[in-house]
Amino acid sequence: MTFTRKTADLVPIVDTVFAIVELAKQDKEKNGAENVIDATIGSLYDEEGKLVAFDNVFDHYDEIDKRTKAKYATSFTGNPNYRQDVYNWVTNNKITNLAHSIIATIGGTGAISMTISNILDKGQTLIIPDIAWGSYKLMASQFELNCTSYNLFDENNEFNMSSFKETILKTMENQDKILVVINDPCHNPTGLSLTNEQWKEIIEFANECAKKMPFVILNDIAYIDYSYNLQTSRDYMQNFNNISNNVMICIAFSCSKTLTSYGLRCGACIILGKDAKDVRNTEIVFEKSARAIWSNIPNAAMENFSWLTTVNKEKFNAEKQKYIVLLYKRSTIFKKEAEECNLPIYPYNEGFFITIKTPDNKYRDQYHQKLMDNHIYTVCVNKGIRVAMCSLSLDKVHGLAAKMKALM
Image: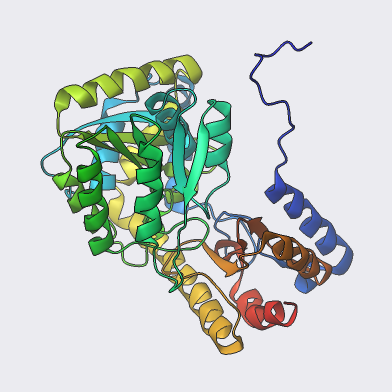
């Protein structure tokens, strides 16, 4: 007997990341923080080991009138100025000939969840990378969907375009719609960013597939604002202008990462399509999800984002850039030292994480335990070990690759 729906998954969720975080904390208390390497948390930390909370973000947030913080948003779809400002910020004038709509969401997670739950019908299959954020699979399960994956890398450590296409074509044999997740740029957890030419090929392939059925790309851009070249980070979106009538793009944007405001839960889903009617129909369905699940997102969080990205854009970008430079320094050191000691890592271009290559998950688990036994705390992902450059100080990065190689 159960009080939940008959199809509910009753297996308890295990938050492996925070379990490892707790072990690292205990180790630091016992042996001293200086003797422990904690590369677990996927949030930005400074060189003193403190969580970064941008001054430009939170000083202004503190100045927002308490009634603005207390009141509901203008609409459950988000405040009009926020929706427009998100579109401007995310697309940076790269989208020129597509209809669009923006729905405010509870973080980037809300945007992803909203898309997955409303695009596919129960029993259909979501397509994701084989190395990916674990919550994609969890969402698929919650919405009674199947999940299949394309290989992210080929034997030459390049984006596996062949596997991407083959997985989609195989899925098309059994259903009448495609939804594929592409976490780019700054892929979590490898740090891969696709090239403009790769995106061009993806759009051309989507258009070809769309001759047979609707094709939706869910572009998860959670880490885009930590690209090492912000001036060109949106250039790939120009390819979206070439989608056919039967292709739709849903962009999942996260204020959590962009503003270092992980707890304020603010984000957006940007719907892009050739036909304004199709975009509006999708918007209607997404609106209902927003109303039914969270009703409103924080009003002051939206107002703060709008001020930061318009009135205070230059100062905000300048402060964020300091930490992008710091991320670059950390990752460059680790990559260089990994190459010198032959520590195998997946291709990394930019972003919060670098992933150690361990194709055998059984070996990965043994290796992960061995690292912890030697006071090095990381996170297991499919076929790899995630190392959070975002939370490691430069002194902890120095020599880490060699330590990890010695334990393989």
